[in-house]
Length: 482
Image 1 (tube, rainbow, N blue to C red):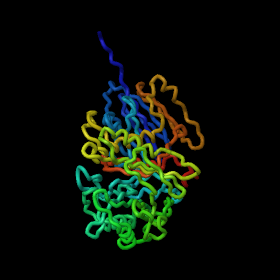
Image 2: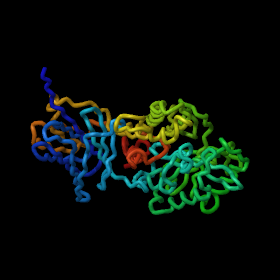
Image 3: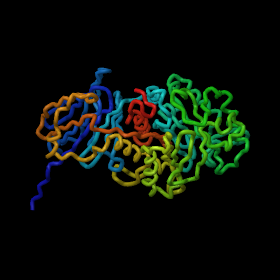
Image 4: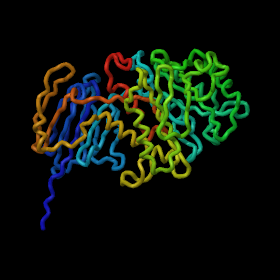
C-alpha cells in the first residue's frame, strides 16, 4: 500500500495592539509578500505549504512612521511544547510574543514597549488602584535560603525598576532591630534599608510618577511575636530615611493621582490600630480578616470596596500546580460587587510545601519542557493564559477551504481603520483580515504577587500584566480618561 502524505500547512495570525502603522513582510516559496497593516487591532492569517521551500521561520519587518526605523524579528515555527508560548527578544519599539493555538496555528502579538521603570506615567490620575492590574512579588526580600526559602532572584531596587508595584515585606524584631526574614531564614536586610531603597526609587526621575503598595507583616511563624512590633514600624516610617509625607495611611483605595511618588501602607499587623493616629483608619489599608491557607479564597470589606483575596500557599505537591494556577487567575476576571461597591482582587501566584512543592518548583516548574518532559510552573501558565485572554475568542483554526470567503474590504466607519489587501504572491497563501471592532478586549484587573518574576524567558509575565491596564478600557468607566 502506498501512503500519500498531504501537504501540511501552518497558519500565522498577527494581532497589532500598537498605534503605529506596521508593514509585515513574509518569506514565501515564490519570494516575499508585503502587507501594510492599519492602526488598531487586526488579524493577518496566512498558510504556508511546509514542503515547498522548507519554511521553518518567518521574518517580519516592522516600520514605524513615528521613529522611521525598521526592525526584523525572526518568528520560530517550533515553540516549546509544554509552554506553547514564547517572548521574543527585540530591540525594537514593540514587545513580540508568539502563542501556539494548535498544531497548525501560531498567533503573533505586537504590544507597545512600555517603560517598566515608569510605566504608570501614562495612566490617568482619576483611575482607582482597584481598577488597575498591578504586578507584585511575594516574599519580596527572600533572596537567600535556596531551595527552601528563596522566592526571588532580583533585589528590591531591580524589582521596582522591572515594573513591580506591590511588595510583600516580612520582618521580625531581632536584637532590637526590625529585620527581613522568611521563616527561620534571615534575608540580610533591615527594615530601614528597605525603606531607603523604596524612598530612593520614588524620589528618582522614573519613580516620581509611580506608587508602591507595601504590605508589612510580622514573620512570627517561627519567631516570637513582639508587642512592640506595631510601634517600631510606625516609628520607622515616620523618621529618616522615610518621612510621613511619603506615605498614604488611610484605610481605603486611593486614585492614582493621590499617591504618585508615595508608598501605600498595607498593614497585615496592628490589630485595633493602637498607637496610630486614627486607629485602624490611620494604619493604611487594613484587612479585617486573613484566614490561613484557604483554597477557595475569602472576602473582606474596605470602605466602599469589596476585596476578594486568594492566598492558598500550602499546596500538597507539584501535582497541584494546575489547580493553584486555576484559582489564582480566576481572581483576575471581572466579578461585579453587590450594592454598587467597587471590586478589588488580590491574588498570590506563589505556593510552597517541603519537599514536593518548593517555591522554585511551583513558580518555574522543572524538567525538560522542550521535550514535553516535566511540569510547567505557574508563571509560564499565567503567561499563556494572559495571551489567550488578550487574543480574544478567535482561537480556532481557520479552514483553508472557507478562508477565501472571509476576505472582504473593511468599511470606512468610526473606530475602524482601512486595511489594504495586497494580492498574494503564491497560490499556497491565504489571507484574511478581521477589523478591530470584531474583537472584544478583556478586562483583567487585580494585584498579582508572584515568585521568581523573571521566569520564564528572562522577562517573565510582568510586561503582560502591565499591558492589561490599557485593555478593555472605556472612557468614563473605572475612572478612566483617555
